[in-house]
Amino acid sequence: MTRTTSEIAAALATAEPIYDRVVALAGLLQALAQVRRVADTGEANEAILATCIGSLFRFDARTTADVYGGLENVRPGLLLLRDYLAGANRDEALARIALSVMQLERRFVRDGKMTDRVRQGLQSIQPRADSNGPTHPDVLAAIGQLYAQTLSTLRPRVIVQGNPHYLGQPAVVAEVRAALLAAMRSAVLWRQRGGSLWDLVLQRRRMLAAVEAHLG
Image (cartoon, rainbow, N blue to C red):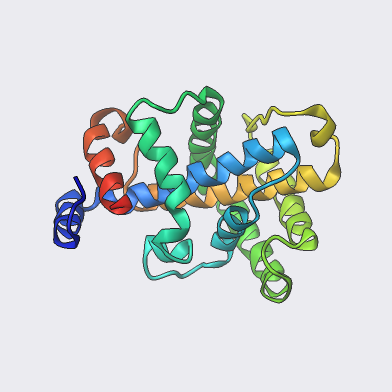
């Protein structure tokens, strides 16, 4: 049955503040799905990757959805999250890498020097992204290098498996690392909005309701 706009609005209101957090979690899954796709095929979905990388340069967005340029841009991630929460997503590798990023986020935010370095690095890259687009090879290469110099030094590292043919190509590796940094951006945002791993256990139904409300 199709819900009316008022019913969707009511669902969002009753889901507060979880409905805000699921957007960040959807952004995380959306970025990691691109990590998996690039590692396996050597190619990303250009539009989805642009949303993910673009989120790295929205430092002071007004809302969680604004980080991704609007709620419609994170719809692929919301669909992934809905399937996961409903038990329909069988991609165990995606769930494992998501957990790795969430765990690494704790180490990352505790390292003030590293978080400052990442922010400053992104600010220096932003003019190129504004001029050439967030998925331009030079932009992805710069973000990938920033990831390699910062988050890649933390342990345990996020392990990405895929096709060795593609993972041996510098441009593909840069794209994977850039998408991983976008995933970390969403993980930090999710935690800032009050997210916790316990939500996935104790708030599963409410999270699913919030996702469904967003999807309409």
